[in-house]
Length: 235
Image (cartoon, one colour):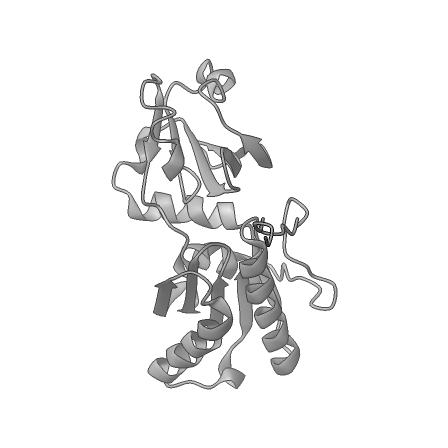
């Protein structure tokens, strides 16, 4: 029997969707352009279903990357997921965005098993990142947090974990910061993708670990702060 899960990832500039059958990827699509989530997300979803030749009513669940990440991106992704769940009367599955980045890194990088500590990161502007830390067994060592990073930020880990890997969209800007740091390696170019949450989502589907659609909200981690652009005075 088919178990179709539609997966949505909009926590960064990447707008990504995947159609997964029993944990195996059928179709996927990603667009990495600024400010396209609102216009492209539903189009990508419809295109996936058309390519697989199935209708919305054949979906068994919706899985969404819940954050942390971009406030606007998360709001669009989660609201779309909730709307589909309401309309189709199917369950909602939520996956921490950093857990998805970690799972994708292990799956797609040949040397992924070489490290003692894995720290996926999302950009939180300037020198701040959202991050969590996993050991070699895949257990969470440090829960999801917002961290302002400098050259000494990994020192407390190095005594116990001699080889640390930083990766994900938030890690790219840290390459120069840790260039001379022994035991800390920054892997650049690791992006978010809806396919990366496939196994986590399917496991949660089987375990019936569903969210309350009425009350579920994105995991923003930090409150949204609106800023007003500075304007020159009119003379």
